[in-house]
Amino acid sequence: MTYFPSTLIERTFRERIILVGVIFPGTDPDVLANELDELENLVLTAGADVVDRLIQRKDAPDPATYIGSGKARELHDLCLYHDVDTVVFDHSLSPAQQRNLERLLGRTAIDRTAVILDIFAQNARSPEGKAQVELALLRYRLPRLRGRGQGLSQQAGGIGTRGPGETQLEVDRRRLVRRMHKLEAELKAVTKIRSTQRAQRSRGRRREVTLVGYTNAGKSTLLNRLTDAGVPAADRLFETLDPRTRQMALPGGETVLLTDTVGFVSKLPHELIQAFRSTLDSVQLADLLIHVVDASSPDPELQIRAVDEVLREIGANDVPVLMVFNKADRDPEEAAILVANHEGSLALSAQAGEGIDGLLRAMADRLRVADRVARLRVPHDRGDIIAAVHREGEVIGVERDDDATVMDVVLDAAGRGKFREFEVTL
Image 1 (cartoon, rainbow, N blue to C red):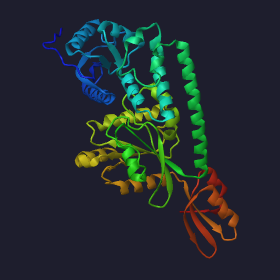
Image 2: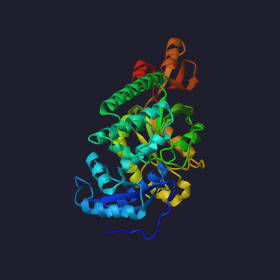
Image 3: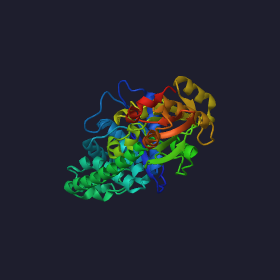
Image 4: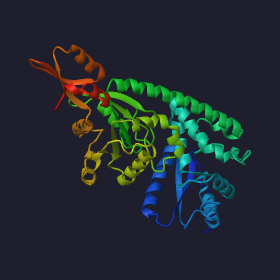
């Protein structure tokens, strides 16, 4: 099929994009359609406009161009018709496929990973976040420098070329590797600092709750609602990259630490997961994960599967999870169906404040199930033990009778072992 423009297309300052998706045997066309919708939202977030889509059915990816030479020629004509700047594939492209496509199409060809990295580059604000994004960008771009010489200079801007490290595109591989090693060393130092901070928290026996979920599900809004954190919360993908931890009190008076993390997305680039490893440690080491799901999303189940996949990849799939369906006020009936389909979940609206009391009770109940609250009965003449209990754990309740002080205290396994002889049934 050949496309010919009937009129001159007036150009704007925004980059023009064509999306490409391939349906392989066993691929659900509806799933691909949802993934392309999400990819379009990613492109819009990156600051460009999608003008068309090209979908192909194929038995297997073509080693040279992913879509085959015939479809590549059709894509070339479609690019001319729409006067596009860049073609974005929903699938990962090898460096060779990317080079071949750019040569055939006469314009930039990138994949979903490059779009996500571009958004992260735009949103990184803290020194740590910028270092993490730069490292991910260099890991992605390094193999694409092989054999290219000055070829990358054709990518003079737009999605996939912005962010820290973009000036490294035309330097040699050795300098890129040195830069990556430097960033890795910086992030290791950050990880060491985080480990020290976490050890200090552990001595305080405060339990940690971490918010996880799909990007733009409302995690930051929920953090603000629960802690008055005042962090930026916008209706925009990947608005939050840097983790934020705030203290909050549960209904029983027990204090916990609540952490907001970077949002997840389908096919989250492996480069990002590796670069953000220090940030994602809070997910692995949490006592409880609050999985925030956008109940108003066109496909909440797809988002749930994407988050579960990332949790498995970072080794956090064994951490207890409380699933909450946010934005339930937009469609209460749909939210009720989702809650019914996911045992132990609940619906709320972080923006409106609906369902927050139920969330707090559920959090308290789930944490107590972890069996870290012990009741100790300490004789009045054992002031040394009472003082040690206050040092070792967090006392959340105290009663006194004629013979002893009864304390409900949060203790880890080691703490419980120290005071085993004073423990009584709750």
